[in-house]
Length: 253
Image 1: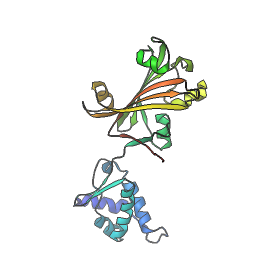
Image 2: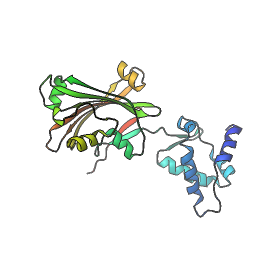
Image 3: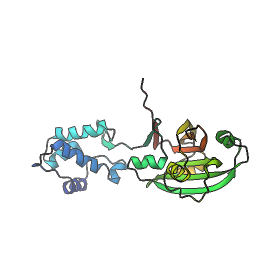
Image 4: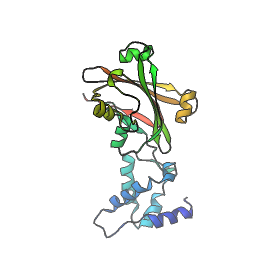
């Protein structure tokens, strides 16, 4: 049962207009969408029982169920018999058939991200980097490290190495969309992304950066970005919290 203070809270904040031409189940759906954004429900608190909401709003339980079913179908809510209804913890997802810089993709999804760390320095290319960028070993290349996430903490750690041909100086404002910088400021068009995705366990460094425990799963992605002539531009290593990020693939026959 919900504590009395919870019921009082819903009386004060959840209302519907019985005289409105908008169907009752649509109004309830809107109320539920607002409700599940509240921090306590994002953190796992059970939603109020359908029978309690129905009584307080003066509508049938079937109307509540109709609105709830819509959110369950959208994978926003998880309803278990005998337990209750909870918000499904949402993970960040990206599609393999439509790649963008992380910041631009999150912006298009309407998700605000934080730059927790941006480090820029020059390093000598080792064998792995030289093979990826098709340059000689020990060639000096720009190395960009970025730790990104949301208000609750970082979810991804990127390390990028850029071909000297691009012309980056290291003084660029990398808080913006990376590939916009390359295209607008350096006339370098990222056209092709060649990706390799594997699973790994968090080491001590990733635990510290991403707030993980030793041995927790990490999604590891290598990305080689090329221009329209298939010439390497960027070699990128991405380490994602596996519990907060997923790749989705649409395959057509």
